[in-house]
Image (cartoon, rainbow over all chains, first blue to last red; front, side):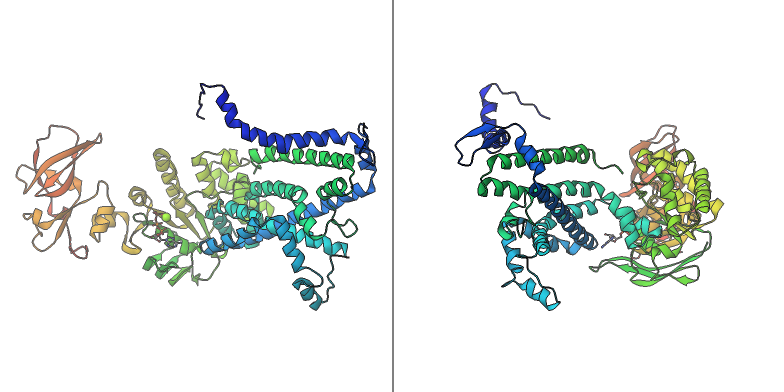
Length: 292
Length: 335
Ligand SMILES: Nc1ncnc2c1ncn2[C@@H]1O[C@H](COP(=O)(O)OP(=O)(O)OP(=O)(O)O)[C@@H](O)[C@H]1O
Ligand SMILES: [Mg+2]
């Protein structure tokens, strides 16, 4: 790397200042506040604040509501990841076979990614709206009574689809790139070696794709756990009966709606630790590439 | 083992470009055929049509007595060695060799026996448990060969298998491939653009030019009687001189031929010779020296022993039987 020597000691700091300021104002300071508040408790009127140690965290572990939210988050994150990666992989494999005509196709598939989560949420909310949406009508024809306002399962399916939808295009691009990096002769050799298309996929293509898959796995889990707030807020608001109340949404709900700042702060600290863990996993394995 | 018959084989790629046309070739059981030609002449396309990796748009491929145009690569009973070896990077050498047998539901004991046997033949026994990336280029090449021979197929197809090796290893592997094929007597089609490789390996050569067969014959036949100026210029190193007949009017036959071909080593110094050459650049090769120059304006190269002084004008002669005569329009041989 090229090394630049600044004669003026101040200049490098000035150049860094905007970035440092943004990091401080929008990340470090709020994070510090959250950590501080997670050890405090306010009284009902917000007048007195007292230090309570780990009580907020202990309360979380004792709260059935919180544990339920953890479970909902797990189901949600796994479903979103499986759906978005599964669909993306299917599309990528289909496109990989005929990549000449794929350019148009690829461009079309990137569109969802340009749509903000909240907008995507509303879009899907309309499509699945029990009174005016098209999907309930279609489902009714095949005999399914769709109602995500009252059915927990329907609500979960709705938020999973709405969240996975956007991520499909992102995953797709990475899978296509990964597939393109596998030499065609590898699959041809396997074809001559007597492996049919399905066999070839599981014996050759999929293992060779594992670095991409692992990378996307982490990215998608992080996405599902932390970036789907907009989708939930625009569609189900965590309901019905907390069936889609994922951890991020609960942080917001308990803090801003329920005004329980201490508990909300403790929850965000837990989430922060989760992100840090996932990021470490990401760096440890993806940087080294998955072994094959 | 099997014979292979190509009948008017042709390929037009989607988009309309013709890569191969009208190839007729009968390959006997156990024969070693080398397809040779410049880059882009359709060698790989032809080989891949035989392998089943490329659809056949014209004509027929027969392996044994079966037309295989519509048969899957796996069911053609062929094995292929790729230029980049195409070893499976996530499998050990042993798994690489066994993969084709496993897919064909060969019994375990039989797989082990055949893999060990192939490993012994190719001296890759010590590497059986390594992954391909832990092997040198030469060792990978052997594994690729091993993967072909464990299957005991009816035919081997090679697509420039040695082109990723350094010059010395290439010569060694060339000899090994020849030995191996002699021993196994498996029908083989071998693609290369290296004419030396082609000459040394082939029972018969097929010289391709722009998707068409220019000549089929034993290496010596092709060398001694090239069927066209293209073959004459392609086979033999240094390349044969192709001189416009009017530049050498005193040579026999130059009256009714347009192009006279003379190999560099067939042009010998002779004080009374009919050809006068102006000497230009000289390349010293050790045992030989190549002398480039002009004869009546035409470029000529001759090969001389590496001793003695050279004047800047040489008189040369050539034996009548060393002359090749070609038509100038079609480039075809005239006699
Ligand atoms: N998939 C394809 N689609 C269209 N044209 C193709 C395709 N593959 C090859 N060609 C064309 O067919 C011709 C023959 O290609 P081929 O790969 O058979 O040449 P080759 O003799 O093997 O060359 P090389 O020595 O460089 O490997 C070339 O002109 C090439 O551009
Ligand atoms: Mg080729």
